[in-house]
Length: 525
Image: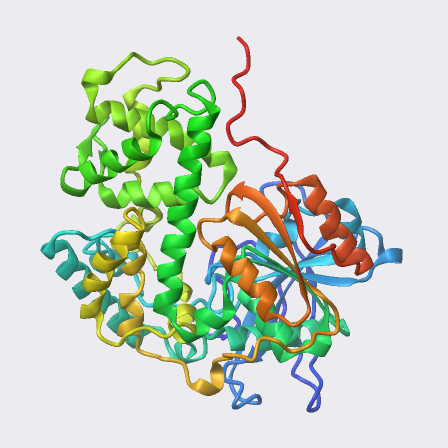
């Protein structure tokens, strides 16, 4: 099988670049015109490629893997500055179609080729796969509980997690040993050279901020403009994965939830359906009920502690999901306490709206007929388990979950059970493939750091840490409950444009508001 094979079914025409040139040089990308969405007319402004990079940088002339790339050509070739590389996070997020993003102002898309790519092991770029069929995957994943509470749930989840990592050891191939962020950054620098840019222009979101920070410190002289939005704390993440996750639960998800419930109450029931009474106490009562008693709804769906926690976490990622979450919470409260039912109105949703909290997130995507080829990938753990140090004994995680629940009653257990896979991961990173600092190399240009005050996935303190740890960075704050900010504020987008195009860094100490209200007033009938 070719190491440059793309996932079957992706509508891409691509060609691999020729072999690398002499030492210190890389071959240019060989672009081929392509259509991001074949169901629509070809806009004629996109190109695709698969670019070869070393599987193992200790043997740069050895086996190659292919990085799938897409570019949207700069709208004004006469004013073209270079390429803007994009990464949406994850780890494991596909950035390929981010070449089609509309979150930047016109002056950015006129001045830059927008380049999206799938990092190594992700989606179209030699996907890291621990199973050969979805049936095999379901046999393992279906035994896991997202938020395990009982002894049986905990033991079954830990046993299934061990079976999962064993499958990764059997099926994932040699790439599993070379998935660290350091290798992703090496790939990125090769792509930078391959598109002909003397310095890197990059925007990384969520985990993509670690890619940006690592690049800035591995190649500080090559930084033209780097935006990091929704930030990790690089020093903490690479030195203590467990403490990083604890802070993510307490200072991220739990803090964002608390602020959401406060803002919902302040908005009032006509704008936020869950606003009546003590929103925190009502939410806690729902969660504690689900801990022992799942709720079966009239449509036959069941809300469990795991589906509930996953969907609440998912909703906190985006302002647009906050008002719908309130309706689902109100509906579920009515299902649990029917004697308090007031009838369905604009502020009183029907019980059926609670069904949104019964959907697993994202395990429902795994359903497939027997022997269906396994088409997703396992790059999330492939990267995390090489970057983030964890205890090697998975039996400690139930104790950790119990301790974390004290400070994070909704998300402590949820976050704690993200770690056991890394305890038995079959390919711990070699130290030579982990960049662990220093993080304060002086970059050629200032890095732009963006942080939301109540970001659930990457708490605001992480953005402050990122700004402090980098030697040459400025922090812009956005006051909202959401993960990542670019595209949510015209004022922020103007700063982004000025930074990317004109290389003018924002003034420090600025706090912005999003353009949209998460709880808009109802439209008069």
